[in-house]
Length: 316
Image (cartoon, rainbow, N blue to C red; front, side):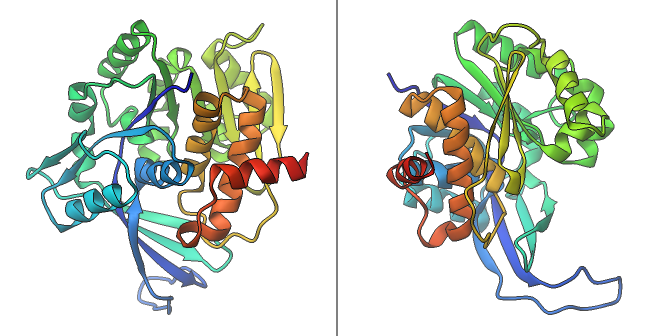
């Protein structure tokens, strides 16, 4: 039976700034392409992917009582997703991110936190009725108090929910990475990219870093249902399950826009496992293919579940 997915975290307005040939020095100027306004944030990007896959996906977040908040709520409704669990506040402005895209699709981002300052209270107040609870990176320490986070995770797990999270690339995170290690062994499915793997473990070798993460999660030995997924960009992804490591390649595409690629991978993986019923290895291949194809098209014509299943048959 398909299981429902609920995600807690950041909804932002993304201003995409394409065509950046280089980062200018202070006092310099470079030309860019036409800016694009769209729904973003970890959870916003997952929502776009969930809509394309027709996934049973609920959003628990907060936006400001402003034009940006209205834009986000309207976009969620256009995606045919439920906005009932999105809180509206007049205490903060809606979060906004400026994503600057290099011509090859790589990017860097500048974020105004706004309503993300309220994410801890949103997480605590939310009545999560879904089978899967996904925590966006903004829900982790130091932004959310460690003891509160652990209490929430233990409460959800006592209710037989599967808890998943994705790490976030942030100076704040790595300055307090000791706080992360205290709850990783409570996470059922952990997502991260390769840079985050090295930053979390302090290792420069992939194999040593993987072994350290397995120790942090208490995963040595026979598989017990807990998974760690490492996103490797153009190289695909790796899955750690017990003492085993599996890999899936990325579907070969020319990326148009990599903003949100990791979030699209996350919803692809969770959808494949819990709504299609795939095993973890096939879900890894599904997610890698879904994210790869999506970033070659993005909003123009997002791939459907059937599109990805057909591509997987061709690859097989």
